[in-house]
Image 1 (cartoon, protein in one colour):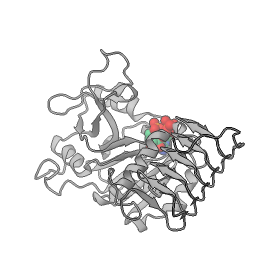
Image 2 (cartoon, helix red, strand yellow):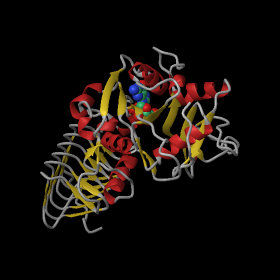
Image 3 (cartoon, protein in one colour):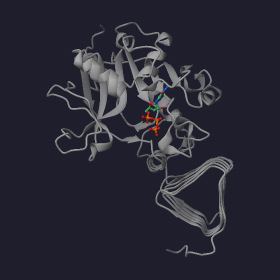
Image 4 (tube, rainbow, N blue to C red):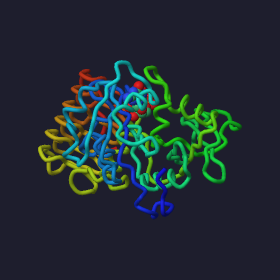
Length: 376
Ligand code: GTP
C-alpha cells in the first residue's frame, strides 16, 4: 500500500486520488416534478447542471478519471459532458440495464477503473453539495489503512439519515439506518455520501443484482471485520434531494456560502445568465438565478429562487424560495413561496402557492379571481 509521509489535510501531497465514481442513476422521486424530464444531477443549480459543481470540485482535488454510473434518464449525461475534456477530466459512462442501487452501481463500473487493487477510489453520491476537504479524506484513508473511509457530518436531527458512530480513533463501530427512538440515536454523525474505497473492496460487492451500499455493503464489511474509518468534516453540507434543499443549495452557491469552481460569473446576490432579460425595476435577491432565455417583467420581486431556462415571470409576481421549471410561465401578481413549478407549466395571474405546493409539468392553473396584495 502507498504510505503517506504526513497526516491530516495539510500533510503530504501524496494524499492524492486520481479516480472517482459518481452515482447519478437515482430516480430523484423527492424532487419531482423537476426530475420528470431531467435526472437530479442535471437540474441546474447556480446556472449549470448540479453535477458540474461536483465534477469541478473533484478535478480541483486532483481527480483525473471519473466513471458516471447512470440509470434513470441515462441518455442525457454524455451529450452534455462528452469526454470531460472541457473540465480537464476523462469521463466514462456506464448505464445499468436495471437500477442496481448504490452498491450495485459501484460494482457495475469496476471494469472501467484503472486503479490497482490497493489504490484509493473516490465515490460520490450525485446529489450532495459539500465543501468536504477531499484531500483530507484521502489522507485519513491512507493514514488509517482503512478498507473504506467515509465522510461523516453532524446534523441536529439525524432521524432521516444513516447514523455512523465511531470509536475514539474514528473507526466505525456500527451503521444504524434512520433511527427513531432516543435510545437508537446514539450519535449525531451521519453518512454524508462521499467515500474512499480501497479498489479491491469494490470487487467484493456482488455483481449483477441490486445492492445498497448503505444497508448491505457497509454493515456486511463491518461484520466481517473490515476496517471502516469515519472522518467528521463539518464544513458546508447539503443533501439536495428535496426541492427546498435544492433551491437553498443553488442560492448558497450564488451567494458564495457553498464552494464551487464552476459557478458562472461572480458570486453575489443574484446570477442572471447572459441571454436572460430582467426589467430594470425587478428586484432579484438572496442568490436568485435567472436561467438562459428566461424573462422577468417589471415590478417582479424574486428572492432565493431558481428560475430555469426560458421561464417567463410576469409583472409584479412575488417569488421566494421557489423553483420555476424550464419554459414555465408565472402570471402577473402571482405569489410563490416554497413552491415548485414544473417544466412548461402555466400559473395564471393572481394565484398564491405556498409551502411545498407543486405544479406538475405542463399543467395549467387558471387565473385566480382573488387578488392578493403584493405589498405584504
Ligand atoms: P430519491 O428517489 O428522491 O430518494 O432520490 P435518489 O433516487 O437519487 O435516491 P438517493 O438520494 O437515495 O440516491 C443517492 C445517490 O445514489 C444519488 O446520487 C442517486 O443518483 C444514486 N443512486 C440511487 N440509486 C441508484 C441506482 O440504482 N443506480 C445508480 N447508478 N445510482 C443510484
